Length: 133
Image (cartoon, rainbow, N blue to C red; front, side):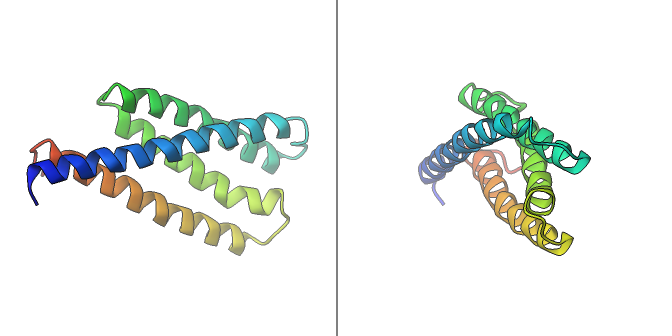
């Protein structure tokens, strides 16, 4: 693929990632703030904390991506881990479903975020002209 096309694709995927991060930050922070008082068990407290964590790391990732900071990927990994943890816990502790449902939810989210972040990193590195290890 030509370098110009790679740069366009990398820019579009970065824009998509930023939209996902913005939505993630908005919805997680507004929901978690409302759930803090209702988190009356340890499981609910952990789920609420992980939701706050992914909201905060989404905001931080947005700032770092906008500045093209080298730590962007590290923060995105923490964000993804918090989203995956929340997707495993929330159905169980808030929805009273089984752990199998929580595991399935976490697996689906992990696959989706893995594809998004993997494609973003691959295109970003290739568009910069680095072939990487």
